[in-house]
Image (cartoon, rainbow, N blue to C red; front, side, top):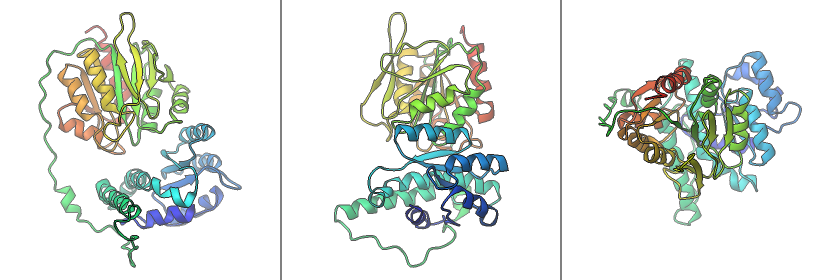
Length: 386
C-alpha cells in the first residue's frame, strides 16, 4: 500500500513523497528531518496505529495536516470520525477488494486532498506552490488515460524517465488573472423572516462544520439542513460526531423526517435531500435521482428545493469545496429573496464552490470561517420575524 500510494503521488508533477513509515512511531521520528507538508495516514498499523499517532501528534503540537485512509465498513466510519475529532483534516475511503486493482480509483481524491490541504500548509510556510487546478488537470488526464487503456484504445501509459522536482508552471500566469466582478441579481422580493437555513459544503467541510456548529447559539430557533459531500456509510457517524460538540440536536436525515426548529439534519451519503411542503410541518424527502454536478447528495438539489418552498424566508450558506455544486441554485435562492452568505477565500481550504457562487452574484456577503457561526446566529436572531 505504501509503495502504491507513493507512486500515485510521485507521478503527479509538483508532488513528491519525502518518506514512508510502517507505523505512527516511525512517522513521528521522521517528521523533524523530512518536514512534510502533509501526512497520509492509515488507521490500522502495528505498534502505533492511526488513533494513537493522532493523539501523540496533538500532544507534541504538530500542525502538519493529516489525511486518513479509511475502510468503508461501519466500524471504519466510527474510527474515521474519531480521527477527525483528534485533528485529522479529512479522509479518503480505501476501495474494497484487491488493493493492486482498485487503489487507483482513489488517485483523483488523493491528489485533490494533498493539493488542497498540503498546498495550503506549504504556502503558510512560504513555499511557492502551483494552484489546485494545476494538479487536478493532471488527475483528470490520468483518469482519461486509465479509461482509454481499459478500453484498449491506447497502450499502457509509460511513466516518464525523469520527473521534475518542482511544478512546471508560470506563477505570473495565475497571479495576474483579474478577479471576475460578480453578476448582479435583482431579487423578486425583499428578504423576509428566516424560517430555515441550508448549507452546502465539500472539501474542507468536516472540520469547517465542526467549527461552525461548536459555536452555534444554543437557543438557535431554526432548522438547519446540510449537504456535505461524503460517502455512504459515514454520514450517520459524522452527524453523531457533530452532535458531541454542538448544543443543538444533530442527526442524519431520514426520509419523512419532520423539520423541527433548532435541529440539524445531515444529508445521508448517496442520497439527495429535499424539502416537501406539508400543512402542519414541512418534511424531508430523500431521493436517488441522478447525480448533480457529479455529486449525490448535491447542494444544488437542496438549494433548489429550499428556493421553491421557502422563497425569501430562508438563509443559504455555501462554504469550502471544489467545483461549483450549489452555486447556481444559491443564485436562485437569492433571486427569490433569500438571505445568502459564502465563506471567504482566505479561510476556505478550496475556494471553488463559494467563488463560483460569489461570481454569479449569489452571495450577499463573504464571511471568514471563524466568524461564520456568529454571522448565522446574528442573521437568524435579527430576522426571526422579518
